[in-house]
Length: 77
Image (cartoon, rainbow, N blue to C red; front, side, top):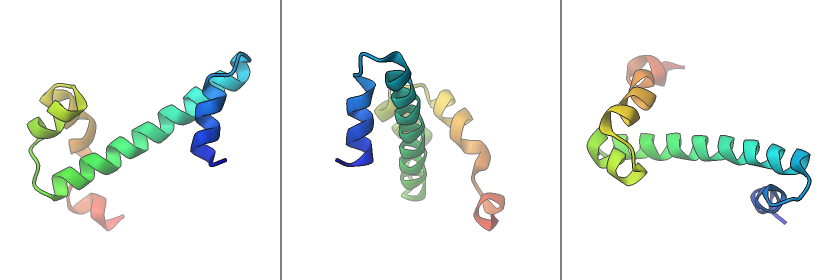
C-alpha cells in the first residue's frame, strides 16, 4: 500500500494516537501540494483572484500566504 493510502487508512483509526498522527501528516502533505499548485498557477500567469476562487478563500488570504516568497530571492536559494 502506498504511504498516502496508508495515511488515509490510519486517519480513520479508532486509536487516536494513530489517527491524529496521520491527520497531521496529511495536513503537511496538503500544504505542500497547495504550495506547489499555487506556484504552478502563478508561473502560468494566473491571478491571485483566480487561484483564490479555486481554493475557496479570499484573494487577500492566498496572496498573504504565498506572495512573500516569490521573486529573485526565492529562486536563488
